[in-house]
Length: 349
Image (tube, rainbow, N blue to C red; front, top):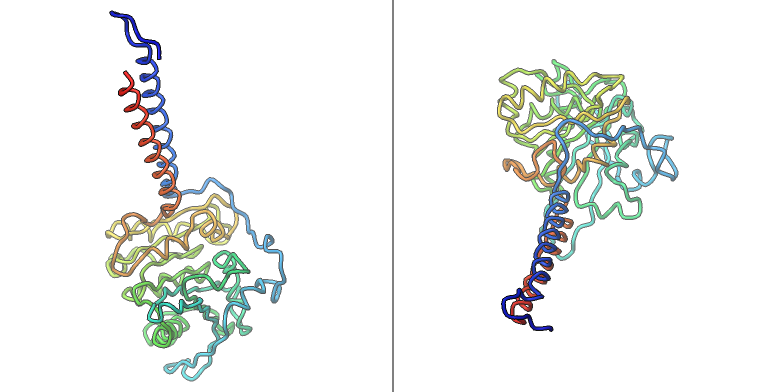
């Protein structure tokens, strides 16, 4: 190192200043990356215009509507209802069981209750699985999903999930589904604090009805492309403690978003944790965006009954913690390296 002359600044001083400036710039860049990694979306819109993506699943289809890997993943079941107009009638359903960890024999798992639309009603016991390929996206590793999934098929002759008479007598299809959920929870290792409800179209509408009937049962609810349940303050007070993240296409040709908007606004006014994401789309399909772009399933699995999650509120994408950890580690390593270099420069004066 060339010594400096008396009265003149040391030659390495500008180098240290440049290193400090570079360090600040680098830390700012890393901090910006950290902020981008923790970005969780916006409350009301998705900039991507979504079209149905069923054609992207290149495999055999059952009945031309359900990918074959879904049918293989879900076991068939039959449930006999025990009261009212539907007493002793048999209802068909499908149940997905996750691979259980042999090292944790007492482990309990979340349960996703899925409600389908009118187009999936019938008696074939597979049509109700339609669109679940956006949840079970990996045909090769579907069993590795860490949750149960229950899908009841509403019979075609009943035409609807619920009606006023059935609600009072507890003998409509919605009542059947609630009874079936209770049965599954008794015979399978289900975590009662992590029961989730999601549905599309008419199934999105029944999500609100099921939530109103059993707000104590569900940890979170996601109605997709369905109508809301009005704005009655008494109803909102009943359901406000359950997080709700609804989705709707901004220009849905079958059902405008106004009903869902009304209910979400009333629920928020009542102090509920609720959001409506309006997808920029001309299609009825908003569930593709919900699961693919907004990571709805990840959000559901973060919720626990009676424990509002402030880190993952409805309307926000879940934080990608592996990315956050990686960026934070990079910032830490860079800061340590810069500090050591500056200390070495000072010692060499």
